[in-house]
Image 1: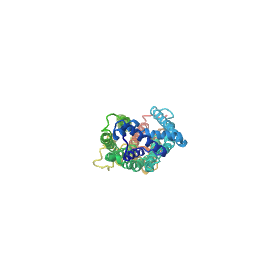
Image 2: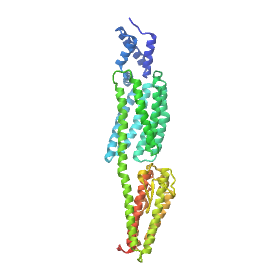
Image 3: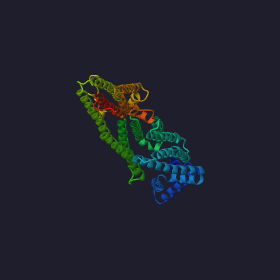
Image 4: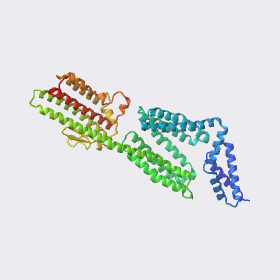
Length: 481
């Protein structure tokens, strides 16, 4: 009767231990059970290698692990509580986030509450219970750093995304720390764990390349969220490495000897598609909407500026020989001084964003000089979501904002000092800078370049509208009430 050698038994014991069967009595029982099954198949005429392969196929890749989980669930009250908590909180948190996303898209009330509850449930209930379950199932000190790093990065990322969507302060810091934790702690711990598996030495180059691609993708995603440069390049490079090199290579190494498609393989293919394709389509749709809508609106604002300015110039010139001309000309000069200050501010903001100093002779492609001042070429901006220019030039309290506020206040004072000052004073209230520029609201302090420029364009148009009203009042073309 064929019998297994001690070497065969050691191999089976090693394989079962590698499946993280840590419950001592169960480990011995499973080794004995598998050895008996292999010996039975050998009695049926199979060699040890054939018999062991058949038994492994019959058991499946996770059945031994499931047996341990079922055993722990039956005899360990704490494990059972953590397992139930993990399942319930995971499902509840995911459902709440799913409905929050739908409510957010449909602009229904309660989206923020659902999103906050879902994020807190996943971060403060699901993640800790999942960590406890993993520790109970493995008791692996070697994987402790992997679990803790995943726990830290996961919680920080959940809260970072929640804060970002809700426009709460500190979102950028949370996302940055989450990305750093993933890149410096989680991915190295995962890579070290894979390198310790002596039976998968052939996959080590794939693991290294996969880690590099994942780091590029995470850093690119971080840069995209924070509107930093090179985000697109890093995301494309990471996606190229992961999906055009690592995935086919790993697939070939893992399943080259398989004659059938496994569920693990199908899951591995579908999961990236579910994550990447919707995100890419949403990003593309938002970019198209942005290009077709917002840029057109900005250009229409500038066209309106030119139209109003031309009308004011025509009105002023028509009164050149009148007694009111001197006062009208002074009003026009005051308006030009104020608009020139805003143009200088816009130029400095674009200069800081593009990282290029504006030359008085040649300028830069993003700024076009016209007879009416400057015209920002919005479609040529390479960093339209850069936040620093707004913080440095428009946030309440900065030197540029103080200068602009003083200039607007002086302009309003000048208008109210004219003959028709009472009527003009009421109209000039529309020039309150807090209506257009960041105020005390924390959300407004996160304004990006393109939004800041849009606010300044609106302010410039309102200044011209006020000048138009004032010119008509001074000329007597618009009678006082």
